[in-house]
Image 1 (tube, rainbow, N blue to C red):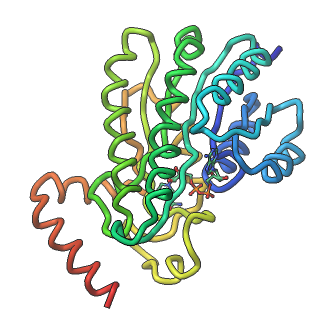
Image 2 (cartoon, helix red, strand yellow; image 1 turned 180 degrees about the horizontal axis):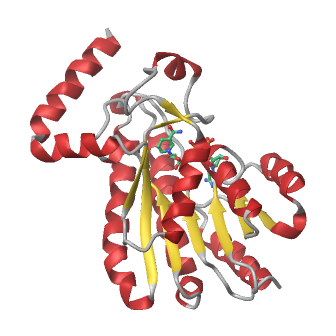
Length: 263
Ligand code: NAD
């Protein structure tokens, strides 16, 4: 039982943003539930942070009964305590909608959207019984303006951003906060080598280390202002302002860029 320690349950923990967040919270003395489909990645992370500091589970977040079983097992280790649920697992297929296999479209929806909904629904009782808890989700800059070549991915990330906004109000009555992160270009396995090479060195689309997103999760847990969306980098807020002021103009700018990119 670790109910004296704060605890966080992280999906997609074996790599990238999830791994960086696991390292950060474990380093601060938290007990970490690490969930991922990648068992080897979880083994390596457990060896690094120590089995006393974590509980690893091989989990496909789109499997509702498996997600519930993983949380039940985690509750057994923490005495029912869950200070942060970090629904972070996600996948992307960077292909035109018309050329994407329907199975891959469904898979993105199952993992990026249903996996988040399943996790929050299952974790709600634990969050409710833990004072000051946080329900945190990984959205994306593609939830600011839908990105051509990432249509279904963008749709799922818009959906989880909206989910956070709704729940941040509903959960107020339960002393649960809801927030998300809106990352831009993060240096993880999700970015192809080609994309990495083509990113600018400066500005909102520059490559950012996964550790910066982990720090946003940490800051969100300790935040007292009620901040909803954690932009990484914060310059992405400028894009929100451009889209809010004139979405057609923003769309036309995206179309020009996309045309140039696909020439
Ligand atoms: P990543 O590929 O390094 O990590 C994703 C992890 O999720 C992997 O360990 C993978 O095994 C795991 N995963 C995939 N399907 C799963 C499933 N069904 N169940 C459980 N785990 C599963 O990529 P990342 O960049 O760290 O991605 C984390 C999140 O950040 C994703 O939701 C992604 O959409 C989002 N995001 C990434 C970027 C970026 O530029 N890398 C930008 C915005 C948002």
